[in-house]
Length: 402
Ligand SMILES: *Cc1c(COP(=O)(O)O)cnc(C)c1O
Image 1 (cartoon, helix red, strand yellow):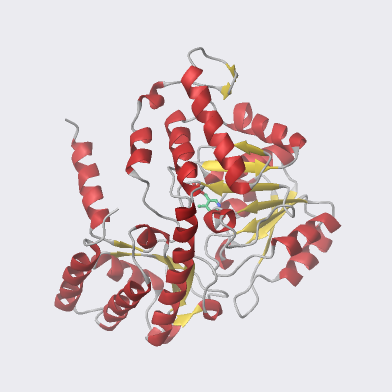
Image 2 (image 1 turned 120 degrees about the horizontal axis):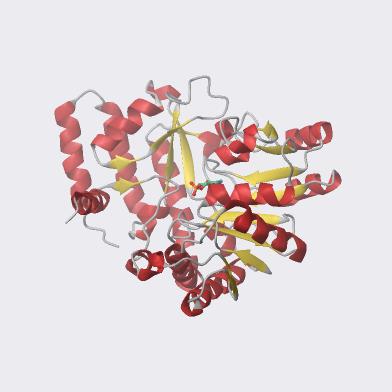
């Protein structure tokens, strides 16, 4: 037996004994894990249902069609592509569908909560396109006036909304109107908030966006993958061609099956209850942190995540996230708006509630978590105290099972 299987078991145990607060992570259900580990991984299916380059697709086609139908239903979208390998290739496929090399795009800066693929200079989106970025106001909200000004000035062909580390609702209508006023496309990348959008807990990008992309492995609780959605038949065709043969070869059928299953459950009323609790927990965690004298960027949250500004605690995000990891609390360091520190030692951490909410944690548990975090800050150099906290964390979290 491969040694790797033993490592997988160790990772499973680690996850079961850890408070997982990384805002982009979650737990895929046993049914989805079964799909991922199935015979579907053996099959090549280049093309789309009923139009494939290889034989033997009678079951694969049915599975992909279910995934497409579920995606369309969940996001009230006329068209859906479910083949992108993950969120980054989904965005790249949209660029390939709509743009030429050197075209100008306008997206939220990574340092302000945007994603690498929204035009950061180390990403292909910033290397092969001319990328301009917008940011936040000093109180931590998206600077819509700046978007308007930059749009007028640079006339981008595409404006990107959406984020990976932003705790407030996005005004897709305003961004869509700005795009329209200069004849630009509007791509809404809702990877982080897609569940909230689908369940009506966050405003929907349609009809203000031409295309929506979302990962499937974050709040949607599916396997790794992505959806590309549009209501425009011409754009749908361009997107399909961009994904295959433009960018990818054979689709990951096992992941597509997992996506179909995840979306089936996301369409049930219980998923709306889950998403409501995700927000309730994020708000409760934000309050509980504030009660322990932590500064929360923009003063709170309207979604599934919060950013903690650590400057008043005399600790940086790198040191704290590493110390938290030692006591089995998983977070990530994060820049805060207008952070003067380097991204390797930024002044913040990001906390998200999708994973712990899947485990069944409620508001009162957010008190417990914030107390753990506070104790770690206060005992940052005290190894024996950190050991004690770790024991308490494991005892607390291992009671919750998914
Ligand atoms: C996570 C994320 C992505 C990229 O997803 P990967 O699956 O990691 O490639 C793209 N956009 C946003 C806004 C994200 O949060």
